[in-house]
Amino acid sequence: MKRQRLRRRIIVASAILLPVTLNYFSPYLMTTGAALGIITGSFIVWVVWSVVALFVGRAACGWVCPLDGIQLVCDKVTHGRRLRRVPGLGALRYVLWAAWMGAVVALLVRHGGVSHVEPLYMTAHVVSVDAAGNLITLTMLVAIVAVPAVLIGRHAFCQYLCPFAPYNIVGSLAGRALRLPQLRLRLSGAACSGCGSCAGTCPMSLPVPEMVATGDLRRTDCIMCGSCADGCPRGVIAYRFARTVSAATSAAADGAPGTARDAA
Ligand code: SF4
Ligand code: SF4
Image (cartoon, rainbow, N blue to C red; front, side):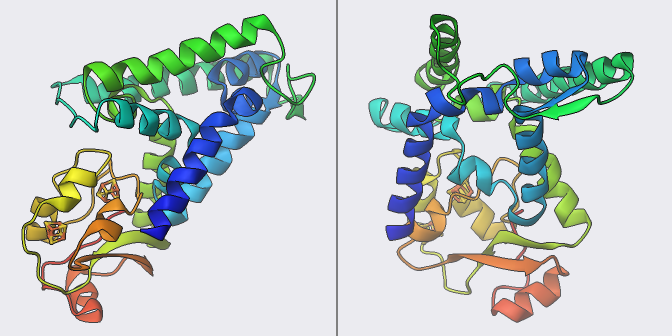
């Protein structure tokens, strides 16, 4: 559990640092910068975020994202209430992301391409929240992340609203398609007792015991936090960094059941 303590500390620290880093994640600055042909700090961050996902899947969501830190605090307040599934709402984050990306590309094209790179665009003092206006933006962001967690369940923002998640999801799927070495979950070969502890600790409310039973640990909503692996009393699930291989080869290499597959 040392690893999970470390993870929690990192994401809570990331959330505490949000007044400093806010602009470097900002869709607004990325979009207004594109209108002027500027590659902003947030543009660079999201490109790097996608490239990293080629190799570690959605681990940046589970290990670095400040919004994950806010949701972790919400989980403490709501005692980790499981997510209520809302049919159709899962598409919303992709719609938001596509609209954002479409706007950035259209504005860059209208401007005639990139004119220059400016990582500190509209961030005069490196620190993002340096005026009352930015404090209001930060407060609104915290509310947008926290309110769904309280009303719908844990990590509801991640699951339904986050326009940043598709960067990780697309990068992760591309890494798998390209058969790059990638961090993933694997069955260790130990027998599952069906205790359900992993489902209880999964921040994304994924049906981990069912995933283990079918041997398919891949879910686009898995943020590679490793809570299931670290919390399993029998060591059924393990982190592995490996190239995607066929199910049969994978199972043979791990001593896992023949149906074992990876999470990406
Ligand atoms: S399945 Fe495991 S690694 Fe993925 S989000 Fe759930 S607890 Fe984290
Ligand atoms: S915590 Fe481990 S033993 Fe328990 S249901 Fe999950 S995978 Fe199976």
